Image (cartoon, rainbow, N blue to C red; front, side, top):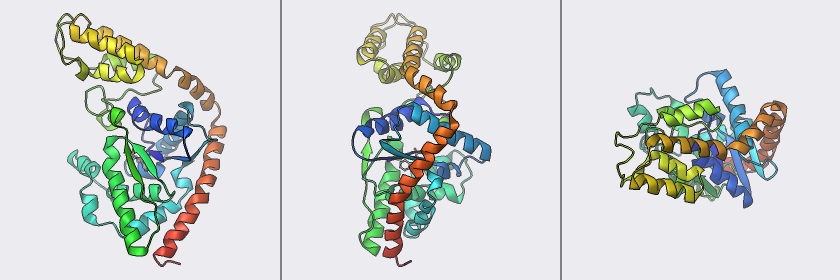
Amino acid sequence: MTGITPSGNLHIGNYFGAMRPAIEAQERGDNFYFIADYHSLTSVFDADARRKHTLGVAIDWLACGLDPKRSVFWRQSDVNVVCELTWLIGSLTPMGLLERAHSYKDKIAKGISPNFGLFAYPVLMAADILLYDTHRVPVGKDQKQHLEMTRDIAIKFNEQYGETFVVPDVEIREEVAVVPGLDGQKMSKSYNNVIEIFADDKTMKKRIMSMVMDSRTPAEPKPDADKNIAIQLLKLVAPTEVAFEFENQLRAGGLGYGDLKKALFEHCWNYFAAARERRKELLANPDYVESVLKNGAQRAHAVADQVIARARKACGLR
Ligand code: TRP
């Protein structure tokens, strides 16, 4: 299972952190992917933007290789019992657990004025996971604590009311867990340091060329070449040998940052070329995309309805 919040256009941090592992996992087992439109309510307050981003994220996932025949793909709010489950498990979730959430504390530290939804975010996320008897949730490092909270909540409920929920495993994709953004911090929309997957060529190039490097001359050897952000990103979008060749050149001296960034742009552009073509077709067929999501919701309901019935019964609501 993976969920993506439709808070804006997808960037390559989303792709390597969450989407690619999820898409690759389609080769194995049953997969559940949803667009977390309820989660977006905590931070996006424009209804049209939410609708647009929700459809946009659906299109982008399908373009990047999500196969709706093999995977269950739906819009979170089409299976609204997830909100009921949030209440059932939220009533057993200690305040202290939520107060310790890094993502919440980070947002407060940034001066974002918190709402109840933001505070309860990890409980809704736990409900997403528990509602589908999920075993594995591959995510980036930043979501690790949320998954640990999900486990804590599931264990607590099971102890209180008897075995009800599957306790999921946490799977962190170490090698790509945090994709650096243009400024070296984690790539994140809220840091305004992203490279969007489907930016047009001019925009993508401009973004990449705007990366801030240090003032060493091209000729200078750079023993810290592996720390260079462009090199780190190149390792994701270029063949391994190519990325290492650039890294070695940078380390030895003689490779200018401008040329490195140009190479990064070329590889990044080509990496997503096939997806870009598929996306064009999907953009012209919004009805098809909607029917995919509706069908996914039906399949998601088939599982969710059983689990919510089990949970209601366990805690004495039925
Ligand atoms: N919090 C996740 C993120 O920001 C999105 C998400 C919501 C999610 N519910 C989930 C991810 C359930 C995995 C499982 O990326």
